[in-house]
Amino acid sequence: MRTVPLLTSRFHRAAIFTLIAGALGAAFLFGASPARPQQSYEPHTGQPAVVKQIAGDLYFFYDFDGSNSVFLVTDAGVLVIDTREHPRAGQDLLARIRKVTDKPIRWVINSHFHGDHTYGNAAFQAAGARFVAQQETARIMKLVQPKEMARRQAYFKEHNYDPNEVKLILPDLTFGDQMSIYLGGREIRLMYFGPGQQPGDTFVLFPHDRALFTPGAFTTHSMPNMAFTTSVDNWIKMLDQVAARNDYDVILPAHGDVAHKQDIKELQSMLADEYATVKAAIAKGTPLAQAQQQLTFPQYKDWRNYSRLESEIKNLYELIQTNKRSYFE
Image 1 (tube, one colour):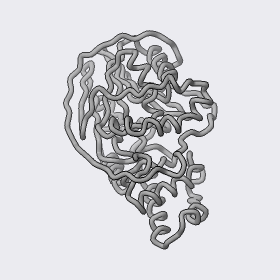
Image 2 (spheres, one colour):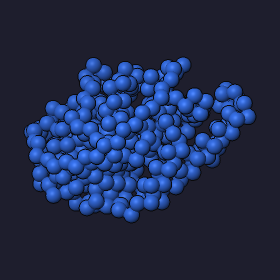
Image 3 (cartoon, rainbow, N blue to C red):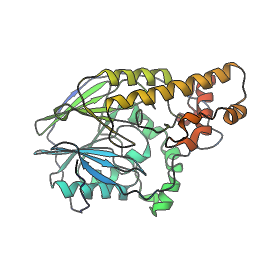
Image 4 (cartoon, rainbow, N blue to C red):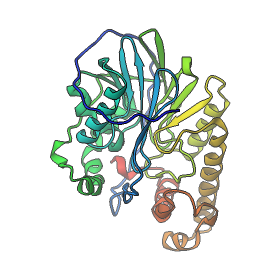
């Protein structure tokens, strides 16, 4: 894989496409507002973001300190997955794409509702892209916009980004369980297996390159935010489905570096371990504050985001005790 440096350019609108779409409905129960807002931002480490060429037409934008993106380059134009956390960060991604190709940006897929994957949408809308997302992602993007903006303020401040430049850009098209986009003779397959880290988690398969993009439901050696999942059991089963597939060789995650199928089991084990341990504490009548002190999970102390453990225990207490997700209220 090679890395690609930065270059700026302009974009033009295009709109020739073929779609195959399925439909799947879902409903979720929500509860009271949390006592304090969810924090999602960690201090900048200074590691530079890079673009890695995965295949002849497929590129992986890897940002250790932020969120990743993927772009596919075809003769008919470019498809992008996720747009980063601010329109200026989106412009930076566009500039990196322009180092590779001057083809028009035709499609943007938002893999889930989090602002660090959707707040660059305005830059791509100006470039003429059409947006697609799973139905639940579209619904939740609109529902939680004020809370998403609130938990992104530290990122905006550190990068000197004006929050007022962020616009909520909703998808032009939504899908249920599966949808295919055909672009330049390539199929891009969007798949929804039910809620994982959150409702709407969208996996994107590039069959010709045997590469799979995964949303926040999978990352390597990192403790995921548990504030949004409506079912840890479904999350673990969903990862079983993904691991069992034989149509990909490489994983391009929304967070973390390039991974492979064998890495899925590590996250599954962590999720099952944390969930079972917290359920046992609740069954014993352990108060939340006591559980936060006693359940330290030292086996994961070298994982990224270990510092959010106390809030993760709190999030699991809410889910297990109420079967609700207050962030979605």
